[in-house]
Length: 279
Image (cartoon, rainbow, N blue to C red; front, side):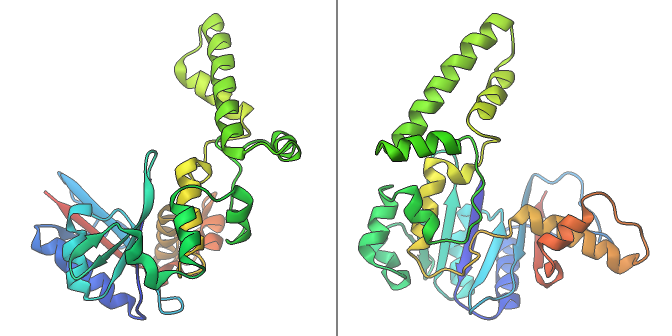
């Protein structure tokens, strides 16, 4: 669901060239799907779509969809240590690539600890409370199905209930309740899931899941750029698309959502797209 690479350097162009060079050695070819480009080739079996962000405080972030089996080779091509962060429905964390080898041991992250190593250990074990995580990061949290609605969260806090247990209990109760109601009404599974999400406070946000909270906690303990997970790859892609179109047709009327996309990533054209396909 989310992957990012972080390299301590001020040269984003060098990183983009290294990523592209590795993919080319494995038969991937570059393409440009944006306005004025060559378009997306037909018949691609695999795609690797990246944006390399401009350097911030001597950190370059690579957003998108890296080919995981090529990350060791990419780290060798870059010639610098590379942090890899990931999050999916079942796992999350940070690993260090150095000299072409991946190290998932927490000790490998010691040089990148911003707070204390003990705090990083707590974060990796999922032992940090939600309020601790939020206090250490920019306020970008969106309430979702894996976070309790404010009224229930307040009640849990007042009675000293662990948010993790309250989350799980609320999801079980919500799932059973709407499962029974949906069964009686003959609704589909998707209807049940939507109803449960409404009960739990909105659409599902992976960053409020237990794995999402874990990786956020780990990031708060590491020396990463302040906006280590924002903007998203989708936000950069959408903004880059609009800005490229505006370059070619400055007088073209903006479509609904274009202004919001441009506002979300005003420097989108400073990002370097690395779009590669394998036939």
